[in-house]
Image (cartoon, rainbow, N blue to C red; front, side, top):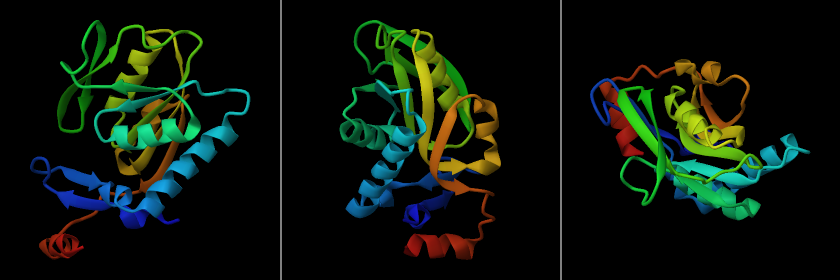
Length: 191
């Protein structure tokens, strides 16, 4: 399936000079959503023979959609990586730099053990900041990150280069940033 047909871009959102990539049309299509889950699940089951995944970690918030579907499909526990102040009890925190500012993620303390082999799920890989923060949180509890999967990878931001040593999977690769015009924006709005 050509998943790129279900990805939209919006200029100057959520702030000026930022390109927002939206994968929600994929979620709105039961056929595309189901195919995406199957493709990622099959990829990791084939690639990790002998390196079994024990948990799925989904990054807030859009990663929760694909992460929960994958956890259900693969019969695995789901752990949530959240923004500050949303997890009760003891937490571990990690700050990071993102494409248009700073961020912080938290996980519940003692979510992982040294026996865990974790797949991180997120909607989009722009830069590597969010993913690296998630990796640091998980590995600080002794677990091993098996891989990281995304619906969309913005190759032009070169996030992959900063994640060497981790198995990465993305359904849609955007090689270069689009040069948008007002005409292009109006065309996109009509879709």
